[in-house]
Image 1: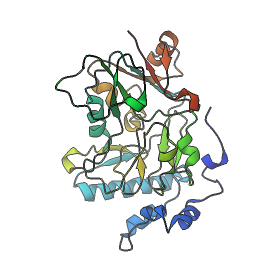
Image 2 (image 1 turned 180 degrees about the horizontal axis):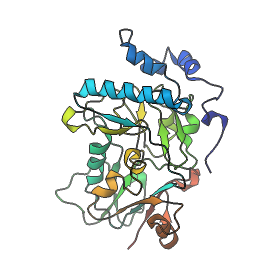
Image 3 (image 1 turned 30 degrees about the vertical axis):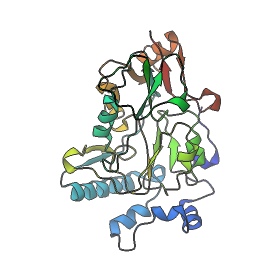
Image 4 (image 1 turned 60 degrees about the vertical axis):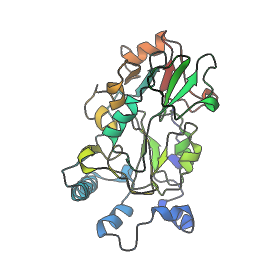
Length: 308
């Protein structure tokens, strides 16, 4: 089960205010609003932790965000806070014998989850490896660009947040801005993140990404259907990552993340680990699966396998 140390609780000893005070002369200053920032920006900065918000406070926060996004992008934006579904623990499977390295998953994720286009942020990375060499990430090629895929002599390994059951990133966060949700999603409260990037250093999968600049998202490309913990536009100076398309998978039970729907060869699988008749349970029971960096005991819920 998940690590339930005091640092994973909102009431932990080190508060966000104390952390910002200690970091104010260093990297933490990235998270401070500009002196001329509007009242709504400062309201967001001093907002309580997401897990401490009452229903009335939460409604006000969501309404404030929707108003701010509508003003910025010139179109209505919905920000939800749909809670975890009882009896659900999400898991993911990836058939490496089918993956063709086309990166359609990458761009489906971009269209769904509102990352910055310039500078580019991708929550999914697909790397190229040589057949016969095994999965040696030191030899992985990140920037392959052949005329056509798949290529002879190669196979492909997509990597994204592994949604670990024992996530090292949550233990590293000094202000508990990231935590493991009951449905297995490792979440981030972007309004609570102080931009220290300790979680990035702790993540062994390179799955977390920092916003060095204000996200550039053309208004016409913005996905207006968002979740507070997921694909709402992120501010500068915070960390973001894959959330299993929380705005889809919680709002419409049974719906797949965008990357799963986009895969042209059916290499990606997704479902409820607690459902004994579900696809993921069948996969774990009948395929020879493995996880990345098993020796670290982070216990990912992202499983790789070769079906052929």
